Image (cartoon, rainbow over all chains, first blue to last red; front, side):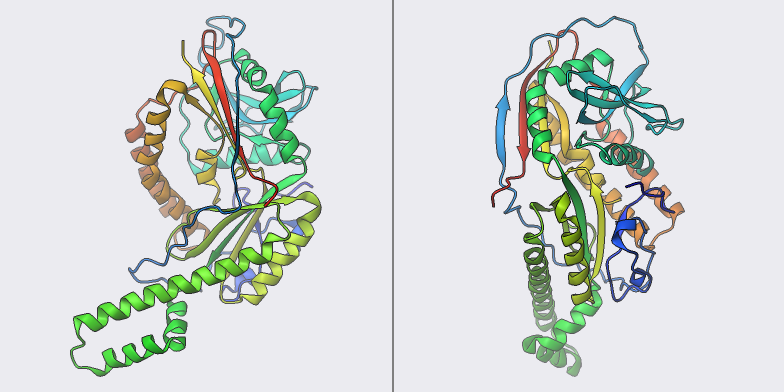
Length: 331
Length: 96
């Protein structure tokens, strides 16, 4: 499913409903994908108080771990060859045939993206200078653009941003030494896609709701505004009550949303919210044949929680659901 | 572009056996800076800052990260004497 480039450098936002945000109300059919939701002025710019954080662990991402012993010294590498050019690696796929993905590589002058093979495994790479790449938006998007292209037809194990090998032989050695592990992960990730769902709220509005709904808080507020010089203590107490009420409320929202999505996802992961308006920052692993169901569920949740803003993105490679750490030993 | 964070620390990555601890400590070191970058990206997406403002922030933060990390993180070579001594895989559990 080819996706046209979006106005803002290839981001994939799936539009979900969102009440306070006018622009987000334009619902594009999910399959056409790629609308970047418009900037909005609707969100309140909260005061200095930090929003409640919903940083919790990942209950349903039980970790299965195994250690594969690999290693043996590699075949030789011609010294001096490509001294200043390395190979940037985007992802690992299963393919015995050499593939080319066109000039979409990372860097100011996009180089050709192609594959390096070991048996039925392939690393998707492009030639790049042997230097540290900054994690600028542009570079990260370039990395992502390649993975997005590759994953249209392949199951991918995405590489972390910024991995550069010196030579082709190094990459072959990598594939060889961890072949079994890569094969297992590729099998496990077959026909699975990752989606991101971020939920933001208007903190000022949430405060008003809490003041309205919570008797203690509304009474305290009246006391404070009624007095000439409200006591320091009353203000402190008010602040604490507000904070914990907001925390409880956002946790309730998040729990409800996660519960709804549980049945249409394979796994989920909660990441740390970004900034003080975000109450949920989650990634979901979805089976391809559940994509429509997941999509529908997100839309119905978004219309039900019409005071929250939903940012729904994907499909991504399974960044949040694969974590491979290779231990290298330097001779 | 909210995936920056997981893109930098998730998925497939390499650690040198002897310096695993150091590498992980380093991740902690610049996590505050990476958070700044993420937050700026979010503000850009929400239209709270302009492309120009974002570019300014990005330039500063990237410079700070560079300074912090120095040139320690170079390209990866596995040859000819280096070897993979182990592969740790963490993935989701399908039965929950």
